Image (cartoon, rainbow, N blue to C red; front, side, top):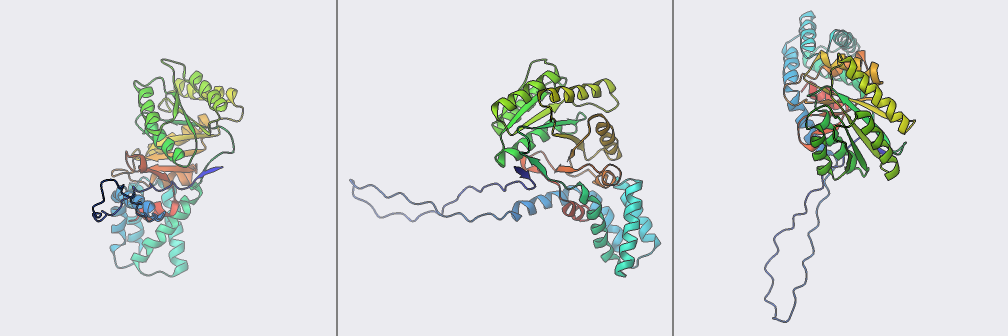
Length: 345
């Protein structure tokens, strides 16, 4: 099985030192080829550190707001009140905020902490423990193909995330087939086709075709061609558009006709900037489709990030990936401890 807990680091281009000029050779002689210089292996930690730096920058708005709470000289009710306000402003939601405050007070009491600066570390531990149930590995290989249905509202970054996920899977050696089942949005097929071309994978598409029919054909093709993964890009829609949500249910039913065990994963892409509305989306799509995982995008500057705490407390669906930019490498696996540290950086 393929287990996508960490993306392989990019392989650096070998750079050989400039060789010294050789001695002149007779005209009839041929120069011996110069062997390439050895290239030092890049440790796995290097790409992850770079990723953490990006995440900290993306969440700096929340981080700076929370950091100011711990600049005082004593731990008192005023500190907890300021922290409550900062967490609510970070989109953590009432339930998650109340839970974190109670947990933090317990940790402060148990450790007998008297330094406000040390409370920040205890809060990081509390957030990491709250988010830990969301940290789950996306496993590919238990079914062949593994059918992944991807949903989300327009503008959340759904199709772009599919392209990045395709790259993520392909870099680990999985063969991927894309299904362009977003037949409603103009140029959606073309956008997905660009990602297919970038990642050198096949795509099933139909001009003006029925989304469910495209999905059925893709799953059938994935089975016959022996592909590891079939990624189904569905049309973006608001959960209030009941007739369109029913179309998603239809896609799921039709996919099950092509493979009785499919879809094996149902992912929702949500925009990290949408705050508590993201939690509403998770609830609505989970009710309609039975979500198995989330991809949270656009945590790259304006997002507050606390909504993940709200999801963890009220609708703990695993977060497989988070994104902090538009580049292919800007999608990474979710790590609860890393996220908590970045949130408080």
